[in-house]
Amino acid sequence: MDNKNSDLSFLKINREEQGRDDSGPGKKIYIIAGTVVLVIVVLWGIISASSASEPQVELGTVTMTTSAQESSLLTASGYIVAQRKAAVASKGTGRLEYLGVIEGDRVKKNEMIGRLESSDVEAALEQAKAGLELANAGYANALAERDDAASNYERQRTLLSQNSISQAEYDAANARNRRAVAGVSSAEANINYAKANIRAAEVQVENTYIRAPFDGVVLTKNANVGEVISPFGAAAGSRGAIVTIADMTSLEVEADVSESNIEKIQEGQPCEIMLDAYPDVRYKGFVNKVVPTADRAKATVLTKVRFKELDSRVLPEMRAKVNFLSKDKIVSAASSAPKLTLPLSAVTTRNGKKVVFVVNGTAVAETAVSLGETFGSRVEVTQGVTSGQQVVLHPADDLTNGAKISIKQ
Image 1 (cartoon, rainbow, N blue to C red):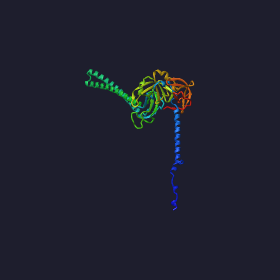
Image 2: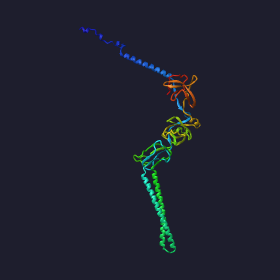
Image 3: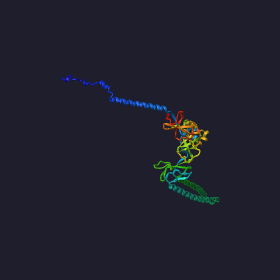
Image 4: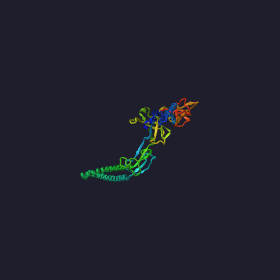
């Protein structure tokens, strides 16, 4: 009964006080998240303000150039190609028993550079020579027969005029004489036939000798001694040619010029040739031929550029770049040596000195320079910078040493 009168109010949950509890873990999470967002916003503002204060600039490069590059009408790339080039083989088929050259050897026209086995054709030549001897012997016999028949015919004709022999005997002597004359002609024909056989056999022997078709240099060796040479066949394991020879005096640059620029190219036009192998060397050249057809796949026209003076270091298949020049600038342009240049727009004046702003990472360094000759949009620099460095183009008046920059995209 006492339990019924007991106060049970202490068991009631006070929900208003629970909602006002500021020490719970949920509240702490909200505070941390808000702090992080605030920090990010502040940092973003600082970065944006910094980026906005950095001027955007355009950059140029310090490079080795020539006046020809600045006065060129257009530039095209290509390769060095020998205009006289041959894969040399024999006309006959056989096993290679001698090869007298290797890559890099110089050969003269008609010089023997290889030989095939020739025992069979040499035997045929000896047989032909024996046939000539036999024909000569037959010719001598025919001559003796003709002389005897001619003498007998004259006697028979005299006796016939004296009625000492019958007509039949005379006719027989006459027929024998004519056969003897024909026998001589036949013997002469046999001699000519034998001589022709000898010439044919000699040609077959000569076909086993492999000779250089012109003065040149051996580029590749395609066969070895012991291999079968079959220039007109496709037998397994056979070779078609033994060496490849090129005339090094016929080297030209074959460059592809876009159809849209081909009207700027004329035969005889001066050019400057640069090779990737020798980037500091410039060669004088001229347009030798514009091939009268276009490549529909590449929309280009093949242009052949010849060297005015060949260098022994220039080799076939080297990559080349050609500057096509205007004719009124060839004398001064093509003869100039490469010089260190930078864009003229990168030069400004600070405190009475010519300076440029060299890019170092995201900052610039004010650098004094000594200038030389001007080449179009570029100027020679003799002191202050090195090849490959980047400089600011059109520097603003308020750009200072050490200033931060951003590169204009």
